[in-house]
Image 1: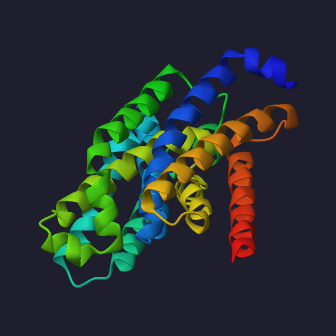
Image 2: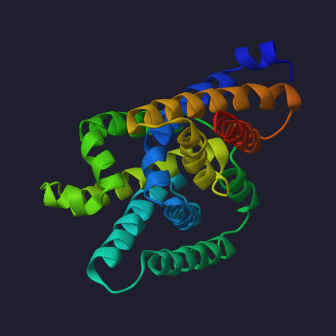
Length: 268
């Protein structure tokens, strides 16, 4: 489809708006995910979202709105296990990862004629975006804006958690808040990039910004610039190339990540 024709299409306008909203939120949280080494948490929550989506398909409800509380509950459970048991967080994520995937597969097996819906959520779909998806993306973006006042505390805890706790920052409470926000973001991003790639969508902007930034403020601003530009660029490229938007966005982000590594090495 030619780019000008695509831009005049209502589905592309919805996709650009939803992509901009979720990329702003994802790019804001990405530095925290990268600095705290939480990439595996993003992958675990993406697969927890699959269980929630499958439950919604099985029940005949709006899948993303079923996935939202399901995924938030999984995120809070992971943080609770980390804080209140001897299990390592990777173990807790692995257990919930397997549980959510197993439940999701059973729900889909019990649902007749589920294939089209399943592929929409697994790989993302511009055509599947509707007004409710825009509202969900806007809600997550508003939640992100509401959490900005805690940026300094989260940045402090990301670099030196023990010192932050000693300075009376409630790091444990913030862990629950961050995990719940990440869960909501992942659910809102599913239609744009798909369950399979959504964890990369959360990690790559921060990973690309990190080699170029010496301060956390710069780290965050670069992540926002990279995440939003590659999301919009990927969406615009996918239409004339007639390719799925999610993989094209991730390839754009991988390209920027590779360029950032080369630029950082050149500076050294």
